[in-house]
Image (cartoon, rainbow, N blue to C red):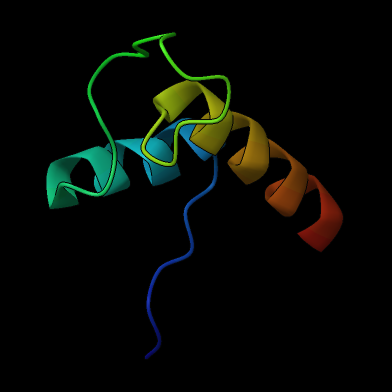
Length: 52
């Protein structure tokens, strides 16, 4: 019984936001903020697309 894999990228981003790893909103103050949910969503989409 392994961990359940998330099916969509929004679930991944939501979990990271709950864990405090990401901000709730994009601040747009820095071009590449490390805690940006928009960039995390893009990364999660590409990662899940590559895995499929």
